[in-house]
Length: 501
Image (cartoon, rainbow, N blue to C red; front, side):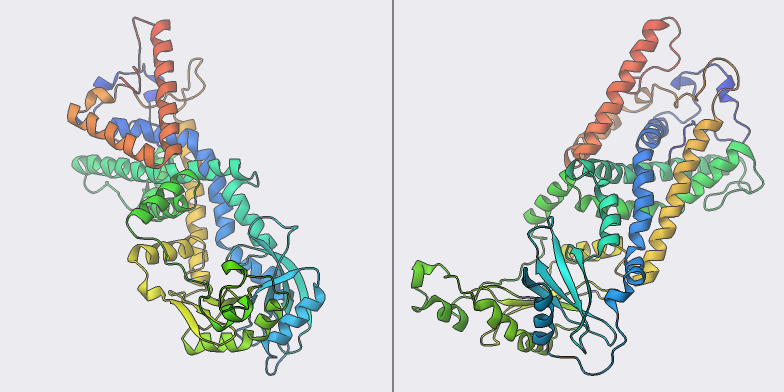
């Protein structure tokens, strides 16, 4: 969203590129105005960070519609035409085990509607982190429709996983996450800076000609750079709230800023409550221990039959969960030892705002723990809703289409920003690119404002390290360029420096 020109309160054709560069003191912005500083920051961030933003925008648009693409591309795995009563879960899981006897079953997602398949999940040592093998079972016939690798808590299928990892780290692993965190860190800065500049421009225009001033729309009769600026500013204003939301939620998944977010949530007791899966003094634990809980000095002895007994109790466990209002689309874990409870958890689905979970002793059917979404801290609820909204899940197809439209709008804003820079290039002389906005911005500010801005930058930079380091890099490079320009032309330095003016 870079607007690489100091607006002087007019929509006349831009002639600044052909004029001699002016010092910041000659700018028409009011004394003590923040506008020159924000303009310069907006320009540098827009030009240098926008490539990362554009990549994140394109991959994010694809990521938004990935849940719907998944339903279309994998219809043969996910849906069947069989009708009739569903077989017991134990029979469906056994059928999947016969197909993959080399793997250990770990969970099952029962079909919740007619025409859906049951997803039996296996731990597979040959796969990567958070990946499992899924065998899809027709719940009516117990025949398989196929198998696939799935990823994460959403059990995403390969295409959706590929798009997710492209958006997250460009398939470069952990080093690639720097790109997405850098984009998320700067997105809110660029968006809010653009809003400030556009509103200030509107106020200036309104004092000169109230009828021609436009804030939420742009004048379609204009041509050239003014038309580009109108589209860039108006569209950026409309999507600013959405961009700030995507930036905030995206940072919760980031590596460095995400760790700080996690520490802050822990310090404020805003973390998501965990479900206790451990069976203590239960019939299962005592039976497997052998000596009233004292066998093996408290350590669980290996029991090869524990997994089979747990599978046999799956149907009763899911029924107990339903009696406790844990229903709909759920995932039931299948522990391989009798010291761990079966957990039944409601999965994220469109228009579902609460995800409850319950732990059940498979031997007795007793509920050992319940995790109610209603009991979560408000911050934990907001985080869960925000993540589901960011992923395009919370409001289903409507959510996905809005995110796709937001991605398209942001892409046009970025392209228009570069177009503005190109349209401001000189038409004469040897210079081939437009100058940045004028230097000397710090001299325009009150000393108290300077201290406040620096303190805020340090605090934000500490919380979002990639934002802080890249901002510091911008300043150092700009200072070096300014000093080099002064050394070459000591008597006429047209621009000063970003850092010192």
